[in-house]
Length: 177
Image (cartoon, rainbow, N blue to C red; front, side, top):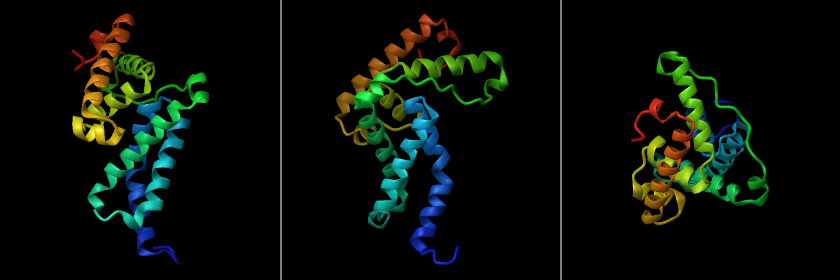
């Protein structure tokens, strides 16, 4: 433990170190831009740092950070200057589907289609299928009703299918039908 660091600071540092990459990747899925994702992750961790002493259940930290992240994204997405700007960041260079070119092309098509969804639909899909949250947990994170989550998820999946079919990529994607 660095000199002068309290036990609470050490615990926060350890949590931050363990979870920052996951939070950053989730933020990227929400916004589609690595720079914006960094800002969103920083906002979520700053809110956690301010509230660190108030969090009694350490098992709830991931949920707290997820809620901060989603709400920061939705608030940012409502800002006029965000709607005018278009993200041009490319998806990360990762391998998957045994590193095939088809797998990479499918991921790029999916990431591009996901970025074209409205913020609330994208958030609902990321929470439901990437974060594996149920409808009630997604509603709590997004600060809306369960019915809104269901409708945003259904609309988001339908629009995602349309976009991928238009690009001829739906057959390459698994789990969307």
